[in-house]
Length: 372
Image (tube, rainbow, N blue to C red; front, side):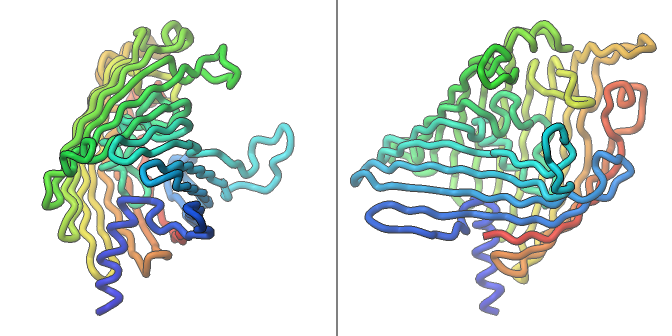
């Protein structure tokens, strides 16, 4: 019975904060250093060869904090991911070997109730709401949230100001303001991800487990994006709203968003939608013996696509993402768990999917996870 009570408290905390279970390795004179880690052995099963096979990886994070005085705290966080699904041969000219990537890297200062400011590679403010539904065992969070696509998910060059409890005056009312610097092909990083942009988000915890949230972001597009994509607009914009309930072992969340000249799709994400309408719904229940079943629907409708295939067919309004997700996670304790996740693809094979390179196959993921 004691084990069940501990799981009922620990598991929801792990779902909310990925660093809640960090291992502290140093704490002296106001300076703290801890590490986080996740090692996942997983395998995908699908008729789509791009989504089939070994998907094993390891992820490690380093979190630091220093107490400057009673009000000022400095902090930093770094997270890397190591791909373990390919061969060790990763020499020059070989792209088939194991790879390493930096997911997050930022540093900042927090000043009491005045809030915090940090800069680096971080999550965009649109993900403050998008993250509410990105909680599935393996899949999810991909109707419009895409890495290095403006401020929809993880991205570089982000300066972020965050304030909790509205300067200490309104419990549960949080907001954030974010600026993203230009990442153009003319910059030294050789990328072409985004122009200058800004975003803001706000969430309000109403109590009893119920929260509301909304976010908006707008960015200049780079010259390459404006003149060579299927969506030729000068700006990329997105707005999203969400609601979640997280109490009594029940987790329910819903998110709706619209994007303009932002969402990428198709083979190697070569195409950009002029407009998308996105919906994500998720329901989960945490049993006190460790089992957490999950049910979700993830949907993205592309509008004004202006895509013409080699046969001269024009496509304007099409489903870009549409799947029902059924899965479950079993937590043996706070460190070890197993999971299975079944993505039931609701998109039928068509001239559009074949032209754009959108998969219509189901995917089943199984895995065992150790985290600390």
